Structures are given as C-alpha cells and as structure tokens.
Length: 391
Ligand SMILES: Nc1nc2c(c(=O)[nH]1)N[C@H]1C(S)=C(S)[C@@H](COP(=O)(O)OP(=O)(O)OC[C@H]3O[C@@H](n4cnc5c(N)ncnc54)[C@H](O)[C@@H]3O)O[C@H]1N2
Ligand code: MOO
Image (cartoon, rainbow, N blue to C red; front, side, top):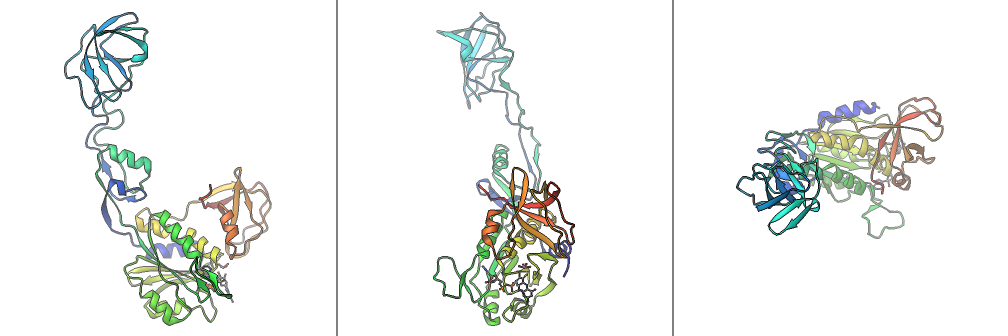
C-alpha cells in the first residue's frame, strides 16, 4: 500500500495535458482557457452617458439651455456643444465634444426646444473612455471560463477562444451482478450506479465522459470492452479490483499491455485502487464499492482531469471546519469520512460503510483523517473536501 500523496504523484506522471482547440465563444462556457485573451480596444471606446438626460457644458439650477440635437446609443452627436446649449442624450450614447456632465431628465424641465435645470448635481454621469478596461487588458490562461468570464471575453471582442480539448474518459463498469438503471434486475442483480456518479463528476470537471457497456466477470468480456476504449485519454474501470476469484480487471488490463504504476493505496474507502499506462491512455482501476469509487473520483480522478486540462498538478483543495462532536482515533489508512456541514460545523455520519450511497448523497463534505490521527474533540478544526452539489 502506498500513501495517498504518492499515488496522486504517480497519477500526475501518467496525466498528459490535452491539445488546444479553438471554439466559438458561445461554446466556451466551462472550458479551460489555454491562451491569454487580450483586448484590442478600450471599453467603453468613447466617453459614454450613464443616464438618460441632457449633455451640457456647464450650468446651475435655474439656467435655461437650448437643445441643439440628440446623441443616442450607436449614433453620436457629431458637433461640439457650447455654453447655454444642451444635447438630448441616452444611456450608452457617446458624450458630445465640449460637454462635462449629464443633467438627468428627472432633474430637468423641458419646454419646447429648451430645458431648465431644476437642481445642481455633483455627479457627471459620464463613464470615461476605457473606464472598464483598456486596450491591452488581459484575461490570463489557464482559467475555467464561467458566465462572468464569457461576458467579459465577449466585451473584449473575442469571437473564438483557445481552450483545452476535453479529456476523453472511457468508463467501464464490471460485474455479472450489474444491470443498467431502468432495466429489470434479476434476484441476484443490482443496478450499476457508480459509473453514473462518475459520469456526472467528469462532466462537471469539463471532461468528455463515455459510458462503455458493462463488462461481465470474464477476462474475455473485459478484453472485449477494453477493446472499445478507442482514443480515450483516461480509462476508468469500476469494480473487479480486489483479491476475489472474479476480480479480473488487473489480469485483463495486463494482457492488453498495462504498465502498472501502483496497486493499493493506504486509504479508506478506496484501498484496492490501481493505476498505470494502457497504450496512449492513463488507466485508473477504481474499487467497486459505490462510495469507494466516488471518493476515489474526488480524490484522484478530479485532480488528474484538472492536470490534463492544464490547470496544474494539485490535490483536491481542502478546507477546514470545527467538528460537531468527538471522533475516535484513526487507523493506519487515510480516512475520508462522509459528513454534513451545518452552520459551518461538521457532523460526521455514524455509518461509514462504503456501500451506502444514501449516506454519500446526504453528505456535502469528506472529513480527511490522516493515518493514525489522534482522537479529536468536538470544536477541533479538521480538514475536509467539499463535495458540493446540494440545493
Ligand atoms: N478479502 C478481501 N476482500 C475485500 C477486500 C480485501 O482487502 N480483502 N477489500 C474490500 C474493499 S475495501 C473493497 S473497496 C472491495 C473492492 O472490490 P472490487 O473492486 O473487486 O469490487 P467488486 O467486488 O466488483 O464490487 C464490490 C461491491 O461493489 C458493487 N459494485 C461494483 N461495481 C458497481 C457499480 N458499477 N455500481 C454499483 N455497485 C457496484 C458490487 O456489486 C459489490 O457489492 O473489495 C472488498 N473485499
Ligand atoms: O477500501 Mo474499500 O474501498 O473501504 O470499501
């Protein structure tokens, strides 16, 4: 058994960054920016009105000004404006030459082709040219492109952006007992679940996951499904990783030339984890117990996918919070305990069996106990991995 950190390092050695590709901006949400985007012009490109009203050169409450034209968004007033004059102006329109402030229309009385200023206003209501960003302003890569990024990149006039190709991930469930959700299971069968959780996790990460057919517990069936892996960057198998007579994944992968990096990690759940290089792909053999597979998804698969996307080789980010209650000392394996954060305090579930998906679903954190961690008291701060995803 190797420590979690050593397993993660070995996995980072297997993870190759994907190539880059150009995508139209509207397709770029959730993708990883691989090349800086640089603004080619100032925004706004001209001094712009922030309000509907009248652009004026000067004037105080009581002054009467002659309205000599109009500046609307997209249509500037092309002449200059002098003392005693005003230009009708709308939000977003270019501020005419010679004006210094906008008198908002609520503060003005319009009378024919002139206006009277009803009050003084210290604010100019003018957005200066380049007030948002200047030409040369940069959004640096790498970065996951969120909705706010998209809005900014569009304002910077980026029609396409250079992003990381999504890592293709083949997911293979193994086991004679498994049927697909919605099928009719026999009396000794259960429904494949882990692969669906992993598929969703991978989609959230920005990967391109593909569910392959369930492989039966024979080396021939496993070989057939491994043969469908095609151009995957990462192959995930689920189950068949332990020491039982029907745990044949290692054998089938070896026959296909797996160059094994490690087998068994000092963690709980997730001990029978296996990894290596399988042709062009990295392969991770996940344990079959549903919670073990999902915990390994968060602890190993997610950082590997992030590394492939070019976001760097770093463990899943941890946070810390106080415990709601005492915890007994930990054994020799790093323990990832399902817990629920309530008002910033961690409640660790009593039942931690790695078959209990209902407990995992109710959890929003995995408390991380180092190997041989001492007993912990209520109120002590401990590390946890946020799981997210709760309404
Ligand atoms: N003698 C020992 N037995 C076991 C050990 C051990 O060290 N010595 N380790 C245990 C631990 S820990 C784990 S974890 C499991 C891992 O076993 P496998 O990876 O071989 O997984 P399976 O035996 O195929 O399945 C375990 C369990 O999970 C269910 N399963 C499998 N795939 C799925 C799926 N896609 N969706 C839902 N459920 C799935 C399967 O039906 C089993 O119930 O080994 C322990 N045994
Ligand atoms: O290591 Mo297993 O994954 O505890 O159930």
